[in-house]
Amino acid sequence: MGLRARDSGALTHLHPSNLIMIQPTEALRLPLPPFSRDAAVTKVRLAEDAWNTRDPKRVAMAYTPDSRWRNRAEFPQGREEIEAFLTRKWAKEHEYRLIKELWAFDTHRIAVRFAYEWQDASGQWFRSYGNENWEFDANGYMAVRYASINDLAITADERKFHWPQGRRPDDHPSLSDLGL
Image (tube, rainbow, N blue to C red; front, side, top):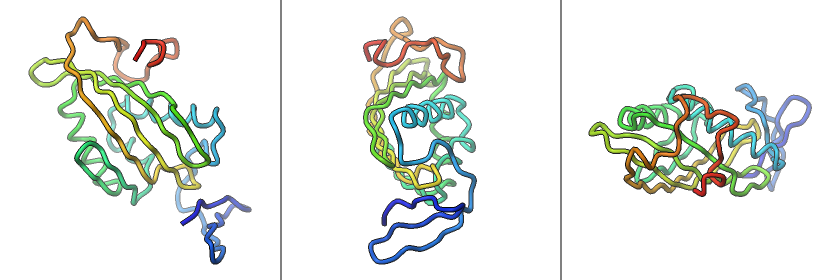
């Protein structure tokens, strides 16, 4: 399957054998592919902001209804499974704060690196490091997400993400600024 291109309010699906007109069924999620560098940076920050809400339903709506994930050893498919996965995740990851950073991009794909800090039920702090590969449909929804993540136990003194829970302030250092 190829990337769909917008045309006169409808979507044209670029397929090797023919062109099929498809009407959008959901609102567009800006910015849309094909991505420029600025659009990719914006898409990454919007994803970071959504994940920092820790609202599984809101986050799941950024994905296509049939989105495919690989997250560690779990493989959720579709918004319902994604929402259930995120509900479980944030029930165990307390004081969650995330920073994402653009690594690379293509017309409809974005690669990010990220780190997030969280505390488990026993009070142990962790910093989780990872990489994600994202693929978007023409409406700007993420259709594929592959994540590789490693956890590092840290002390409270080693934490670097101290903003109040929610959106990371614009003046907070990036991963690169923090040497992460």
